[in-house]
Image (tube, rainbow, N blue to C red; front, side, top):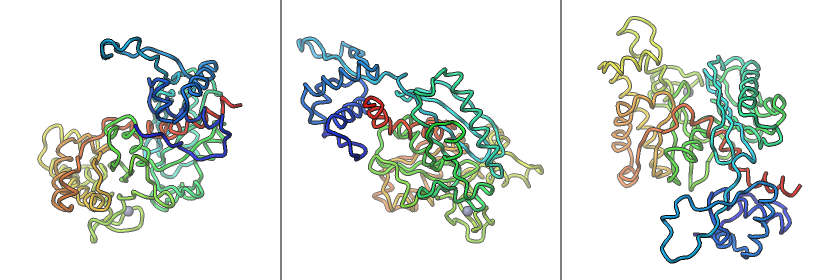
Length: 402
Ligand SMILES: [Zn+2]
């Protein structure tokens, strides 16, 4: 295996640096041996053992045997003792704020969710009320998990709007109407008293599926979120990619019908106006002669309604066409379809696949695999927690130092 480069360049002393590299190795490869760490980091076995002893003393790591000794080759003697982080040594909060819900989770260092709460909410015009709700749910989750605040690494927040990473402000004229200029991370930081980081919800969905779900083995992956908001999160060369200012992946506002409906972003015929579950359900209103909700759309799909299937299939075709442009530009190996509409399954996925095949350059189309996400509506909140966990080695190394 290649030598591990440090995740973050920073002005640490040699001893601090060694500690960070050992923690990073154990974080990335739970159940590794001291010899593995020495090989990956280039540190001597003695240095690795000394650092491991220190980390054991402060209860940050634990020693354990291989889970299945039967896999050990015969005659190789005693197996090495393996090292893992103590899952309960630190925790991360994930917060997902969609157009119509708020969801909060708390995960331990191993990424295991300990407690989770969610609530429906009218988010679009109510930033203060929504942030208060997120704070209330986080407090409930902390109480249920019985986690002391000093064990919290921070809170990651996914929000259904473009985020300017330079300022941390929502850039959302129309998309999240009442939130333009609000800085949600600072607001959550004030309410919870812990550091918080903000990102777009589709970016968090991509991270969730990459770390915990369908994208575990993919280094180049697009995650498409088809919910009340439509967007994409990108993982390129194994790393999240958010663009120069944090707004990469806004495929929901790419034009697919030049003469289509005016979109809430102010443009016309955006993908979101044809492929959000709300837009798809609306197509059936004149047939059933009543207002249609996404839940009623899914009821019709379950009853194998021909019109509902056609409406979802046409949405899939439009999604596939937009994805084909991304496939030509980025040549991903995996496209993960998430968000509420993903529950439609192959009725949605097959037209997406066909459309990608039809509109992409053959070489790129042949290699891309299209699948539904495995985390469902929890992808974004788990990704938000993963955003904080990914930075845990540095935070933990600094805690041990101090
Ligand atoms: Zn739009």
